[in-house]
Structures are given as C-alpha cells and as structure tokens.
Length: 432
Image 1 (cartoon, rainbow, N blue to C red):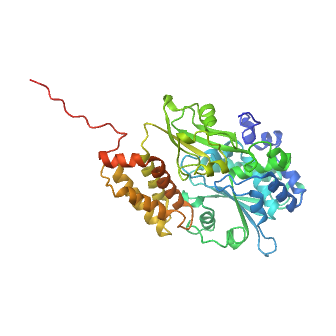
Image 2 (cartoon, rainbow, N blue to C red):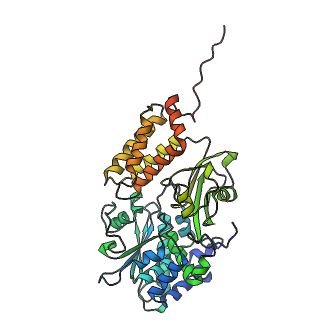
Image 3 (tube, one colour):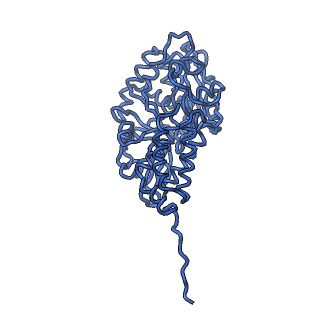
C-alpha cells in the first residue's frame, strides 16, 4: 500500500487546524484557482477525475453537480452532509478535527461550480467539539476573505452556515437532512423530484459528504489525471476507512481504492486481536451486508464489493472473530435501526421492530424452527420497499447473516441457547 497520502498528508502538522498553518501548507490555492475558472470548467475537471461520492452511494460527484439547473430563477444551494451516524464510522470526524479549512475550501469550490452563494454544513448533533472547530475555522476564513462578499478578491459571494442537528440517524439520508435543515421533522421525502432539481427550500441543491468535498481542492489544484494515479479505473483516488472490532490497531486510515481487505487487516489493523480467527466483517458499516473469511482477498472498491455481494458504504469495517455470535450481532444492529427508524413507512417501522424481537428470541434460546423462514421473509419484504435506505440496512443485516451463517441460526434453535455462550455444566455426582 505504497502511495502518497492525500487526505492525511498534513496530519503530522498540528498547525493546519488553523488558517495560517493551512495556507502555509498550500491551502486555499485551489479556491483562488477556482474563482478564476468558469463554473462549467470546474464541473468538467471534477467529472474527469472520476471522484465518486464518499458517503456511501458512490455516485459520480461531477455528474451530480452537472445535474443542477441554472435557469430556474431560484437560488442554488450546497449542503454538506456531516451527519456521520453510521455505526462503526468516525473518519469524517477526524478529517474535520485535523484540517477543517480543507472542508471549507472544498465547499466553497462546489458552491462556485453551481453558482451557489449560501452553503450549509449539517453537523451531527453529538459532534460538539467538531462544531466548535468548524465555527472557529469559518470565522478565520471570513476574516481572511476566503468567504463572504468578495471571495479571494473575485467579486464572488459565498457564505457558509453551520447547522447542528439534534442527533438522528435518519438525517444522514439526504432528503431527511433537508427537511431537518428547513426546521421540519427529519423524515425522507418521496422522489422525484430529486434534490438537484428541488432540494433545500424547493431550490436546486447539491448534497455531498465531508470526505467527498475534501478531495476537491487537490483535484482543482493538481488536476484530474493526478487524482486518477491512485485507485482503480472505475474507483479512482483514495478512501478513508475506519476499522474496528477484533483487530489489534483499530482506527482511521487512508487507503488506495482497490486495496485488498487482507492487506488492510494485516498491515493497518495489525491482524486479528489476540491471534483470533476472522469470522465475519462489514465493509461499510452495519448497514452493508456482512462478508466472511472467504472474502478476505476482496478489493475495497465499489465494483469489487458489489460483485462480492456487499457495498463499500462509509468504509467502516467492523471485524468479528470466532468468539462472536452472528445472531447476537444481527440482533444488536437491527435493534439500532428499529430505534432510529423515523416511522414514516410500514416496512421499516414494523419490519425492524418485529425482526428485533424474533432475533432476540432466537438468541435467548426461545427460538422456534419457524423463526428462521420467518426472518427470511422479513428480510425479503423489507429490502427496497421503503422511502429510504434505512430499511435496506435492516434487511442487509438480516439477509447477509442468514446467507452466510444459516447454520448458526439453526444451532441456536436446536440447542435452545446461544452456542457462543458456555454450555450448561451438569452437576457432578460425588460418591460418598
């Protein structure tokens, strides 16, 4: 995994958290370049780079920007999705903590590309410190003329507003985020119309996540070809990953897209905790289908993981070993989604609620033979049947755990207990 660090190259320099240190490291050079370019040229450079959204879906960023109409008579908006709530994910948090001005620069360039004068950063409610860091950085950027009425002396106006959420997982879904930003209940909207056409305040809106926008300054400054030097043809660039669970060195790391999971586990994660055996892992947080030890050589990019039956998602890798019970893990994950469901649609609201209870019943030793086909039905009838992907996360947990570990479910029912727990010890009869 030898490559020039990109998003993390300044992490050894604590000064880049402030404006002076960021500028000394080359910061805001890309913004100065962007304000002298036409909006169409900025979009074309980002398109040529092949940058894909790093929030989970992997949609081409330049293409998304190009969808925004400019002749509606309405303002256009950029919204930054910093509602990082996917279980196992915390890489956007560290990116902002260490280099907040890079996010502001990427956001300002995106705003310039679509003719936006007001951008919003929607921050997860629990991220108090990160909000403070961003507020300070925004103040510094205004004072230095990188935001405001005359960005970098170009006569272009770009304002950035920081908005703190109230701690709801559903607001990571882009249309629920828009509702929350407008002061409404955080529930997903029916689409179409899509946000690019009718988003914030019924106006054309681009929504990108933190990591996506933090790649933009380098693309503008160094070019699309430079960005493509790392990664794969269809998944260029690097990706921030979070690896946790049964590994020796959990943490956030930058990898080249296309790196095999085995290398990530051994070289970055330090191998399995205590020399354990890999049993299961999630490539992109708990909402992405589980994979097994048989998939250890799968490359971490959008196409390879899709072929393996999962998704890159937020690249939050959670690792399980032979001591972990898959049924227990599935029950905990589904319980999270049941708790975070906004309740708008029946498959998600009812499916996750009932799935949690059936999984708990199986795990606690009260499972019945009919519960396993019942869980198959719940997973099948939840997937792709709701307003947003929250229900799909629930279904992915259920379906993938049953696909790869059906025998473990059957053993729970057969034994009348969790096989990962100590077997009951019969009392010894001592001859008197």
